[in-house]
Length: 143
Image 1 (cartoon, rainbow, N blue to C red):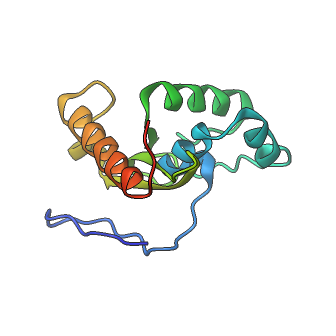
Image 2 (cartoon, rainbow, N blue to C red):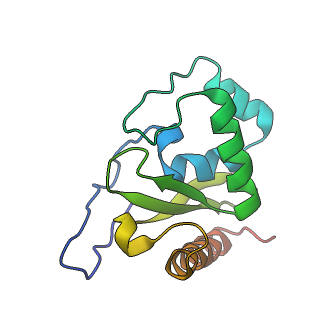
């Protein structure tokens, strides 16, 4: 619905409404990880895991593991899986019924974002999860 440009001189812009493959996007993982397993199975029944970069997940078993990790963490990660040199962290936004209906994502080059476990990465992840929680609450979701 909206994109907010960063303050750094090098910016990555995605037009609102752009479509990325769920297996190679942080938002796709965040939303799918929030769905019941049977719904995920329906969505992925005839899904093709297209390879975009050397880091792209290309099989269902590895993707199921990524979804499990996403569920456990509370946010999805794209570590240069859709585009080389682009990392994303995304947390799901839930409506009043608890359904994941959108996601909030932060995107940056890995050199600025870091990797899972780094202080900078963890700071981004906490901020994204907090923003998604606030948006979810505004939609009537309460855990």
